[in-house]
Image 1 (cartoon, one colour):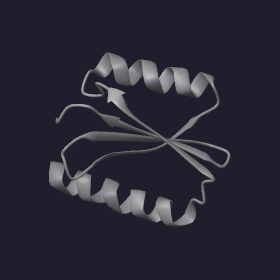
Image 2 (image 1 turned 60 degrees about the vertical axis):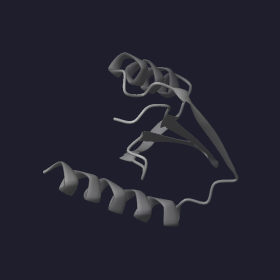
Image 3 (image 1 turned 180 degrees about the vertical axis):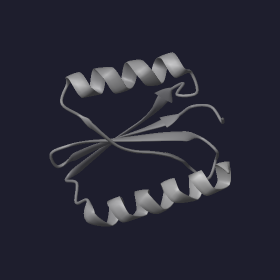
Length: 83
């Protein structure tokens, strides 16, 4: 079940990534996104600043990746720990 969910999330991410033309991509990998409180605070703070959660997925290293968009700018947050 989890593999199917991951596959669907990856497919959606690929579809979105082909349509997104961001001028700037900001990457941050210093957060422990495996902690639910950290994820909640990040999502709420980003929403307050006008960022939209575009995608949540896992990368090849089994780390959680959150992608936020605001206009032509994209922020990518990658967990510093494997899930």
